[in-house]
Length: 174
Image: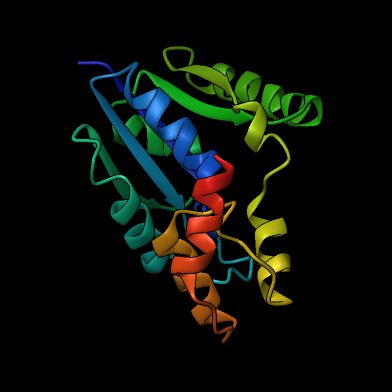
């Protein structure tokens, strides 16, 4: 059985993340989305909330599960008995950083490969940080997030939005 992990903070999960999850899930028997619990960061959502959001939007993928983890990604990969780590790339700057991590992981665990998936062009600019900034000012984030996730973000920022109207506008653009 080919097992892969896709680690990240997912604060919140974006359509770019979901695109990588769907594509990676098609490549392996089992994909485990690892939700990093990093005590040094101040996330918008708790680790448990992020895990729930991932489970909500990946329910249509029977070979995808989500788990919380802390510590080194390579140790999480070993615990999951994964043969590879999936990483998404948006730009060349992502590649430089991700290559360093992949090479370090390869030294520590030569049996575990890293697979880089480039994001679809329509998500190349997208980051959770950008989405949170837009939402904090009451901007439209339905272009960037699954609808249920957008509703949770708006709720955190106490922004009142009619998601049905905004979602219809997004659907018309796609």
